[in-house]
Image (tube, rainbow, N blue to C red):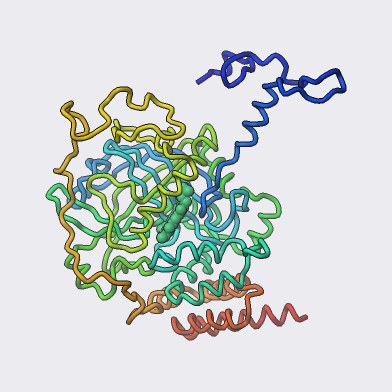
Length: 488
Ligand code: HEM
């Protein structure tokens, strides 16, 4: 790469000097442009291609580099080398985001926040692509594109639609847990630094004896949780659309490095089998009373990217990125995500996206994938491009195979809604709230439902009532009050 401070002169992308970057070439001082002014053409053509597709979800975000440090021994659960000894440090990159807004959206909006982490371990990259909520709207990945369509822009008007959004959510009673969190105080964090993060899905840990334990990841902010009200956000957005991004950037620039403590909840397979509900259901939490938080370590964000596009925009996280000792679970949503992320990134960034420095592992890697658009390294020179070969390369490591997972049952489109309880956990969450928190939940919900049809609002109120009659009544009263105010 050029060191521009040592070589200030402008050149073409091919290195040849540019003689005039002020006046285009024309036929006479007032004449039209000449096609042979290739600098003009190169400059415009590059500019015309500067925009790449934004992420389909989580388009607006901010990233930072940091370090993960182990403070407690969890080697009885996992052989992942990132956790191999107390004091061990691993470099990482984090990106926080909102979900629904486009790349230019305001930060201070009521929405879930993405919480994506990439740990550059000595055994490859481990990504946790989570949110600031421990659950999700549903448990069947067929609904994910519909969620996107319902919360993003209406196909006819090109505008966001409260009616579509709430029509969709209220028709999925399993969404009530997540909707309750998003409409509560926690749905509008004050900054990215003041929120917890969750891996959300159940994953698995595998230890040196090749034993599997189910695990959930919790990242608890050491800055304390802070939220803001809709009214505060409204004022902020009028002044600054980049509040969360700016807060993260500024705090790191001034040396005030944010930290999150990593805890895990673990569940044995025997406990999973005896669990009263499906432990791989993303709409439910594991109660901390039964599965206490176990401390593991902390991460600190301490370096801003040198270039937003190169690092933050081009970063590519995927739940498929695991390392020995950490693995997946039968969660249906997780299973679909294992496909979707790299697929999206091959489209968004190109097939060689893992070579982009922010995505490249920091340990040696030899996938032997070849060619493809924008291959900018040596493309493995003359190393064998096939297996089996007699050259001693491309060796796999069967000792790293996971213990077999017992699965049973006939293949079918099983209806996961049969005999399920959608209301207990959102009801419990509601009952834990103090009166002020409940009122905030009612008012935020009523405002967010906005101009949705009355029948849609009523459907949501009915769902809330099933979780707790006081929840339904509170939302109904807030909706009625807003309607009365609007008539005045
Ligand atoms: C981003 C798909 C569920 C968290 C994305 C992207 C896709 C996607 C395609 C854009 C990736 C890119 O262009 O780099 C899906 C599908 C889901 C799902 C198909 C369900 C079937 C979830 C869940 C969570 C989540 C349950 C959290 C627990 C995120 C985050 C990002 C993201 C944090 C942004 C990552 C970044 O900062 O680059 N999702 N998603 N998603 N998703 Fe999901």
